[in-house]
Image (cartoon, rainbow, N blue to C red; front, side):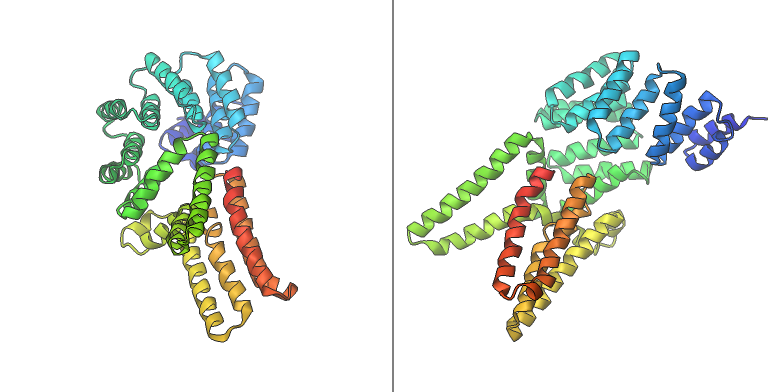
Length: 403
């Protein structure tokens, strides 16, 4: 009769992690049981429990590279990138022949936009295991970021040749195609990835993005988003400030030339550029939620973002209409606050970083608070309106710092 540990390992391999954890917990003194229990907790996203198991395992045997690898993955999931790099370096120092470790470190450097070094690490991993799916997928992503499209396409072909029924590979190929501007090809690969693994969240997210890209406005936004994401933080700031200065200079020049009327479309274009990036995803989610098939691709947070931006837009429209009809200034404050909150509030639900998410959420609620309560505290409603506009402008700059 199989032992509880053997049954636990079998259940783990079947992906039945909760049942596996129950079986493995029956042998708390067994090293193998604790190792698989750690993996169960990690796959169940119970990172605190998994972290506790890693500490116990390393206390018993500090030379376990796989345990350090799990610690690195946990740290990455918790946005502790410095710790993730420290732990993966420890794993590599113990076992410098594991391609997955180099692939993981390449992924960390990809997140930091250190593309050349990331490519070197992915290639090093492939020199040890030429068929390593992790390193191949990362190599394709990195080459895409470096605009080396031919090499990226060649790598993609190798990935699918070696792993024609691997959901992860199809997902990454889909994202590479999306970044190359081929949303139809991307959709095919995301569809295949979801057929192979219906629980693949990365593929689901890619599929919803590809569907949104059917809209040419969203396609242009996506091109810009991919382009700006390749830039370093310094270059992003140079671009943002450069656009702002060019806008200010153009408006001033048109005013001095007596062509102020031409400044209106320029101002509108600048506002669409400056604010559109925050609102286009929630708006697209709202539209996709009306699609017969697309609505099933949205997760709960994406649905919330779509509902919220529609709610705020309707609130702004209704209160603005009431103000226009009655002249009661309070409704102007409500309308403007609802309009300005459309930038930070719906977008907050789409963020992965907790710091960034809470910043946008709290900031959006503060804008609404100023609009709803401000007129009762300050007699001059005009001052409240100015404060709301100032808060919105400040958010567009502060958010880039927090991100």
